[in-house]
Length: 257
Image (cartoon, rainbow, N blue to C red; front, side, top):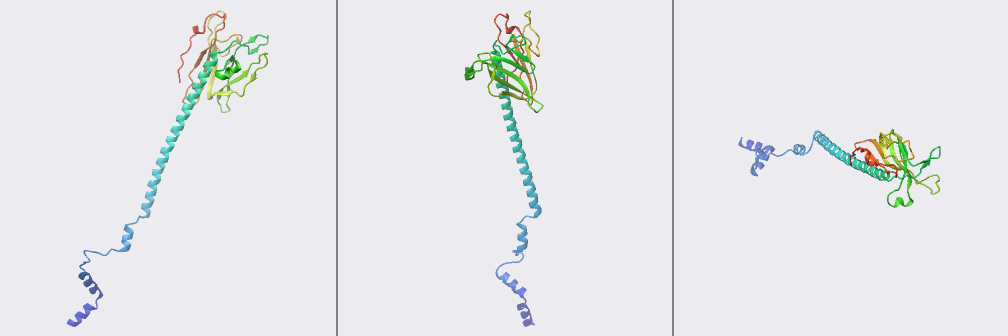
């Protein structure tokens, strides 16, 4: 019986492994042997976790892109507004200077041969004035300020220049008309002077007495966008012998850009 028991013990592999573990000072309950397949799953990511991470990353990138796009639009809008303000300011300074220096010089003749020195219409005016700086070396030039259609349901303000031949011939254009202001929604020119009795006239849409210069010229423009055009009123030269001065006509205070 004792011998059988010993044989049974020696023939049991499990019992032998338990003895080896005990001999090494290890215990199954205290030091469990890990399962390699279970450990592999514990240190990886499931497909759902990967998809959730990609979705969060996509939302983050979308937010960054939206922020960059808004910032870029803001910069472009700011630059466009600055350029627009500079365009309006330059046009007003040029027109104020040129109109104030308008000369009583013949630009055309009427049907009776009477010399005309100024032409004023609701969308065009012609006069003679010197250009500033080195451009004035050619002498006073015929200037044509007009509003033309831009082909996009709007207007643009242009200034054309022409040389006046000494022999009184036909004016010779100098290059193409220069763009002063574009994207004009609506505009009008008006004129004011004195009548035969010396009394101030109301604002007129057309200057009919081309033999004399008006005392005041007004330019009103409605522009597209946020930048506005301050109403421009310019006093012109007073001819000798006409009496009075342009200062007797009330002028509207205009804002500055």
